[in-house]
Amino acid sequence: MIRRAQEQDIDAVAELWLDTNLKAHDFIPARYWKANFEEVKAVLPQAELYIYRDEEGIQGFIGLSGDYIPGIFVRSGRQSQGVGRQLMDFAKGARGHLRLSVYQKNVRAVRFYLREGFAVQREGRDENTGEAEYEMVWKP
Image 1: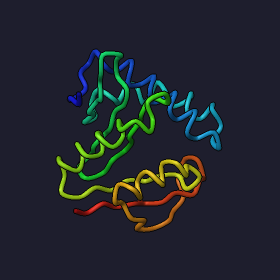
Image 2: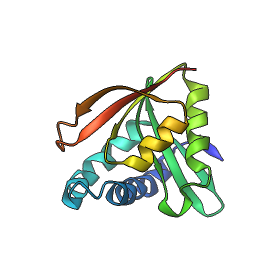
Image 3: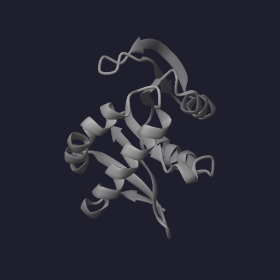
Image 4: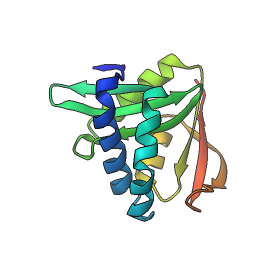
């Protein structure tokens, strides 16, 4: 089930954010993610977040900021089981078009976005990490 995140979800969402970033972005030092954890946790309650929850708890979430997706995160044990696709379908249904940035080295995520109909609009560099990234767009 997908629903808007509530205050009691924030701790679990923040932990999922950290765990997923550490595993998906092993090309960025772990200290970067850990150093940003408290700041991210503090701003999560103000964000437009939607969680995918089942009987075992929160399995994933997506953030929306207008037509921009700041992040989509799926628990590592639930990846490639349709959770990300359901979250993305939810976002597509809520917005007329979508944008996002993804690290080029995160090949699994890039493939997911391409399968979901996103196209690379331009290449750039994340000023915080120095890593190359794609800006991708989806239009129906």
